[in-house]
Each structure stands twice: as structure tokens, then as C-alpha cells.
Image (tube, rainbow, N blue to C red; front, top):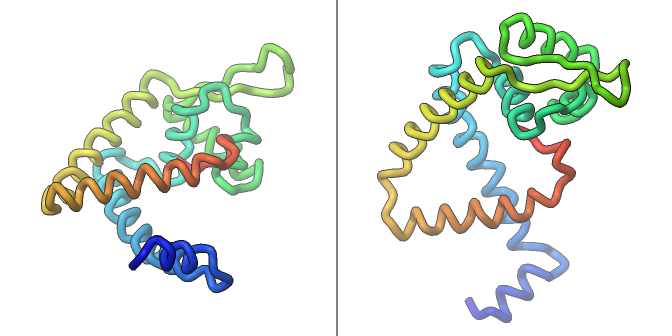
Length: 164
């Protein structure tokens, strides 16, 4: 396909390439996430995926508010509050009053929570690497290139709204 054809397909009114790409992503992402979830589950004891996502968010956004976490998780404040309470009781998250606003609390991982996240990520990373090892070097390069492109496209979102 020539670059002119590629460009006309990409920018044409039917949006054929972006549409095809979106369809492919929607087909592939659940398979990847199922794999990740299964291996995360093995290495994170009784932690739910939602709780683990909350821990990942707090790892990247230490000091985030309950509202930030609720927005990230796509849940109501009350739901986020219950989740945080469980994470605090388990010793994985710390609540600290915000210095500038006494009614607001800042959330951060405890040392135990950080270790849990690191262990689960390390174990899942190893499983992903093992699964990907069946691909050729050229295929792995294409996967890396594609992931970098997706990261660039989706990193344009508001960081507080990104998922973990």
C-alpha cells in the first residue's frame, strides 16, 4: 500500500484504519488483561483487581486525594472510601491529613503496600516475558513499537484519570 493510499484511508471520511485499529485493540486488550489479571491474582494474595489498581495509582500519585482515587477508579466517593478503609486496615495504604486543608486526606502506599505492588509486578512481568518469548525478534520489536505509540496517544489524558 502506498503512503498516499495509507494517508487517504487514515484521513478519509470512513476512518478505515483508525476503525480497524480500534477493533483490533478491543479484541486484543481483554485477552492481555485476562492474562495479567490471572498472574496478578497468583501473586497478590486476597487483593481484588480494583484494590490492586488503587495501589498502582497511589504508587504513581502519592498524596492523591480520595476524590482523585475515586475518579481514577470510576466509582463513587463512598465506594472509594470503603476500599481505602480496607486498604488502610490491611496496612497497605496510609491516610495523612492534608497540610493545606484539614478536611482533606492524602493517600499513599505504606512500605508493606509498596512491597506488595513490587512483588506482584515483578511476578507478572516474568510471566509476560515468558509468554512473549515465543515471538520472533522482529515481532517483539513491532510489539514494543506499538506499545510506545499507544502510550504516547493515551498519555495525553489527564494523569489523575488514568487507570493503573
